[in-house]
Length: 67
Image (cartoon, rainbow, N blue to C red; front, side):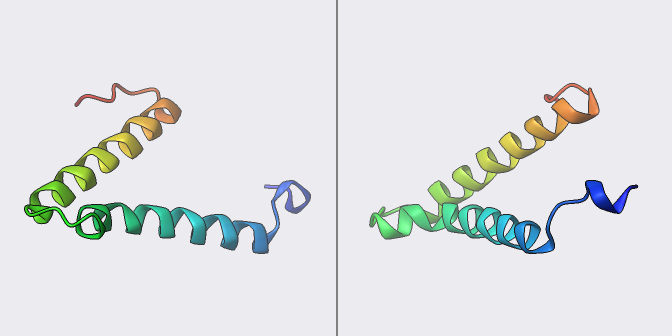
């Protein structure tokens, strides 16, 4: 790796923080909206988000997203 091709450490830290903050707030949505069955909805949102992240990562690996 060429050190000149690497990005800024501050930029990497900020993008990591923003990604973590967004993904950590997704399961809180049902509770903020006052859903009566918030745990089930939060689990569904978390599962869907994990699938989307895995499917996006499969684009980089060249493998099928479904398995």
